[in-house]
Amino acid sequence: MAARVAPSPRWWKALRFGIEEEYFVVDPVSREVVPRAAAVVRRAGAALGERASTELVAFLAEAKTSPCDDLDKLREQIRAMRAAMAAAAAAEGVRLAATGTPVLGELVPAPIAAGARYAESLAVYRGLDDEQSICSCHVHVEMPDREHAVQVGNHLRPWLPTLLALAANSPYWAGRDTGHACWRAMAWARWPVAGPPPYFASAAHYDDLVGTLLGCGALMDTGTIFWDVRPSARLPTVEVRLADVAPTAADAAVLAALIRALVRESSRAVDAGERAPDPPQELLRAAYWLAARDGLDGRGLDVRTGRAAGHRELAGELLAHALPALSAADDLAFVTAGVRRLLTGGTGAERQRAAYRRRGRLSDVVDAALLPDR
Image (cartoon, rainbow, N blue to C red; front, side, top):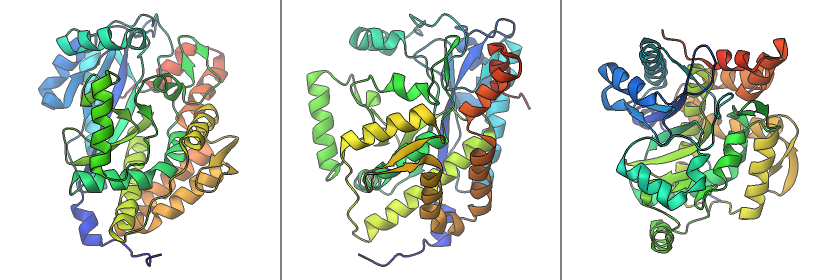
């Protein structure tokens, strides 16, 4: 095996990354989701322009950062982006909640936003769209080309269940506790092309499989490739899209920095000619379910070895793996503190349940998830 080479600090300072986040629009009195996202996005456009957008479901609003080459810049963009979206919602008489699934409201069938593409999606995916009420966080990391992005994705696969456990923030659905830390992942798993991606020998292999899925109708278009890692169809990036929307801007920044470090370590392995581990899809699926059910609590599965292991132990191994890249980017202290906060203070899912336990009110869960407007 090739020697482990530390990443170049100069290269790291130039590497760009960014995030996309989705939020639920909620009524400030009932705390139920309401289909007012279009009005919020129109108002937020004054501050964010095209970085604010609607989604398939009419009570979801999306915002994205610009590409950033530095974590401090990204942290400030996330904070400002959330504040702008929250202020726009307040001006429309509603609020935004950062939770992976809706806590309260009438959800099925979900109100589908206007537009030809959304109408086509409803015709193709039918009842799946009726229950597509989820909010996620997507992290983009710049890549030199699609071939490199595909190979990096192979190296990321073993770490995806642990990232899912760290980012879990969706225990409630429509007024009940699902018993899962990340119910969003369970809802997402029903789609024909979703969850952990398969191993790809090359970009051509990726394109051949996507072509087959398009040809048979399992994909509407390349925008409906919902694997949790994919080369972006629109940007020169690898996109990691498995996380619930983070409860706070700081949590979102920790996730983004951690993913960028994992991408860099994967890129180093690709450059060194190291073959990526290829755990069976059955093990990845089982590891995903364990992570989605328990978050950082309980035991999971190390798909690299097939052994049972605690999610907290696996989180420590993930952090150790990312350490050289985090150090080179001067992100180590911030990310280590953020991961420690998740391990000791709880994931978003644990914090949601703690909010409920205080008075036994789901409205308190929604209130704890509301975005600040400054």
